[in-house]
Image (tube, rainbow, N blue to C red; front, side):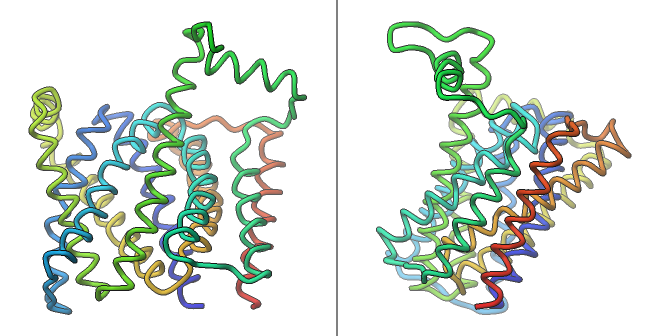
Length: 323
């Protein structure tokens, strides 16, 4: 069960990184493409990991690994768009609740991964806890009200969408697309790790992200955005903070990929609910103690749901650990 503890550690780090990402996107970068470019360009430094396990792939293996890394970079564009549009405690759970579901379906189809009866129950409990902890209101709408809400957000077949709800629609679309792409990446990288050594597969998948970052520069408008932001991000303080965030993200990402290489990819993603618990406490602490750094909305009734969701996540985790 080493992969479970590895995944928990990775999600703890990721919760802090997502909070910092929200701060950087809101206060400094204001562009998902620009931020994705810098994340991708730093992938080149993963080549140093080959020192610990030198390995070079065949052309087919190289293309497969780089495709996974390129897919991950594309996913980040949608992810950072959603993260920039709303609060971290709203965006992360929306995508996170869907990622394990998409992963379960895709891993069953393409990897033929299955779960035991106990693991499947734990999977359902963990996903339910993740969904519950993401709900912002305690009121449960009846069908008619829910239908009207969906119509107002997404529009009728023959009608337009009210301007007030267009940002919500974009947020939902970006979050769902990011969730599906994340799930696709996890399934693809799991396949990479079944056919290639972990360090080699990981490093060359990161090279796909690096190439993707270079391709961003081909688009004139994106290149102009990146060039513009360079003038404002060269201060030592900003650069130091960005480096710490990216190094932390790299550590969490490596550990998560290590967990994926060892365990069931659907179960690992179902544990993503623990990240919401970590995120909830991190954001609450920062928004309370350092409101200038990060401000999030917290209401009394919401905490009841979050505690119940965290309890379900704890139950699901116990079921996995006691197998």
